[in-house]
Image (tube, rainbow, N blue to C red):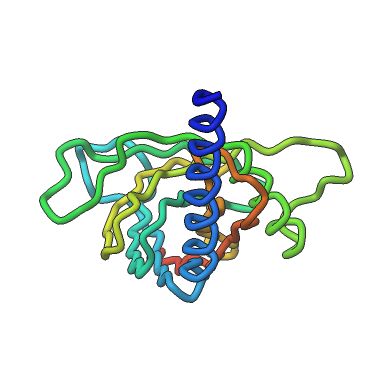
Length: 189
């Protein structure tokens, strides 16, 4: 009998903690207004990195949540890397990749903006740059090559994806997340 009472007590406390987390998250839910993004793409002048372009990125994040950045050039594939010896003051991510939920949110965003043509059933591979949870300002340089080259008429975008409220890495559907996309300034001579 005592084990049953203990079990009910543990489950009750767990449910109260989850309810508190949910209510707290709903009240403090980040929005795209909590994030400022700015980016410029230009020719790479860093001789240590053998990539044609560099995207200079500035992020001012007022929210305490993690997310990922995704450079996107409509209709073209790009490969990216970072300078491991980057000077102090620049953020260097520990990893690159994509979470399935981020990819789903990106595809919805890009289809709504008319940037993806899904009529051919083709899937898209996005490479994300993890941004830390800490609310702060981040500067980074992303070095990239673009298949088929790039010209000043090609639209280049940068998207920040917030996956939504998660418990142990699982979005319980309580918060659907969002995407903020900007057009990148091109500075080609």
